Image (cartoon, rainbow, N blue to C red; front, side, top):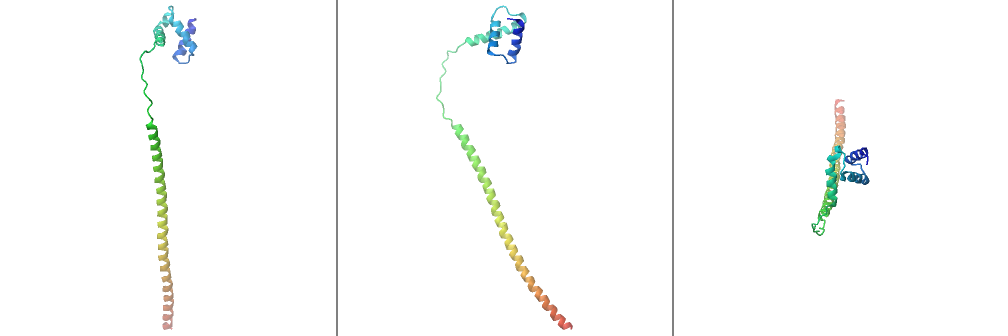
Length: 141
């Protein structure tokens, strides 16, 4: 293998852009005895990778039965309750606003009736004033 090619592959390897075939070329190069002196520092790393690939575990891993996923359903229920609570809160605000508007209309109706009643008394005052003016004009003449 060319030394320049190996150096380019090493650069690509450390940038994580190599293919599997290129990594195998690097493994093959660093597993031989005649490695360039300035690249010998990488030889133990690639030998370790080779050793780790060959290593197999003999430990027995007990598989636990799958637990029912209550957390997922609890979170779904919590979102539902929260959304429902927000909806009811907004609905109550709207209902309270409508009730306040109806109360305002009732109050304004009562005020209007009071003003109308007062206005009818003003008509009586106008008639009283006209009558009074007639009497005083008659007396002044």
